[in-house]
Length: 321
Ligand code: GYE
Image (cartoon, rainbow, N blue to C red):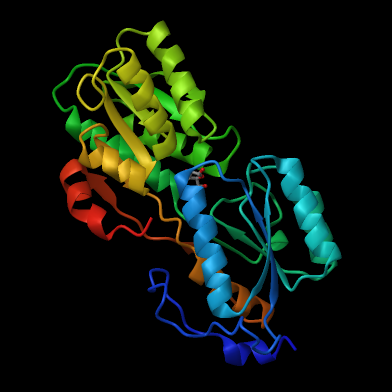
């Protein structure tokens, strides 16, 4: 049954148009699609919502039966979901690990059951890279670096620049790596992180942490938020404190989802590093190849850009998410 899949593999590109390919046989077509168990992180951000939509739509287009679970940002829920996919004997498991560590046991269970695992969006930190077939996602260190490099350029000539950092979920790959890339870029410069705390990638988390930062520090020049949602929360806190976001305090975020891009176009955010959530088509393509026993690259990096305020104004009308 699995071998029939090789023939059915459609070549898809990451940015392929949503409506273009007509392989949707969900309405009474042959029930020969592979079954994928997908353990999603949660619904914490605009990025995540767009990612979930992309995965669901791509599964439909590819005729993949998708078993989807939302872990509400809790590792134990993701582990339970993966275990249940093993029990249900799905053809392939894909998941976006909420944190980097602590996956070996459950992934060994999948391996013993001969079910291939694909990491999507976030990486794990494990000695054993036989526990997964491939990792499809962004280079988060590069994203952090781009944020830091832009800030260096922007603040050239200023002796000291005080940054507060709104970190993503503690222990998550994008939180660890976006911090690493940023600190790498600003090393040896007058730009300094004076406070850093997690806002859990949520708008309310970003707002709360920013309120506390504003109370504790009266010299904040810049907010570096690991995602748009936390940046948007910080904007609320800054405005509530009677300051002007984008002017009194400059804001850099990561993701470039619609609400973030709107705030950038409106001048409330100063720079956004893109992180593309539209991984669905590429994920389905990789899944089909892995299940068919084909060799796939161990790492598939998603290409991304950055946006200034002017670029956001131009890009907004065509933005898909
Ligand atoms: O940047 C953030 C989300 O893992 C890349 O998770 C993803 C991150 C994204 O909650 O908005």
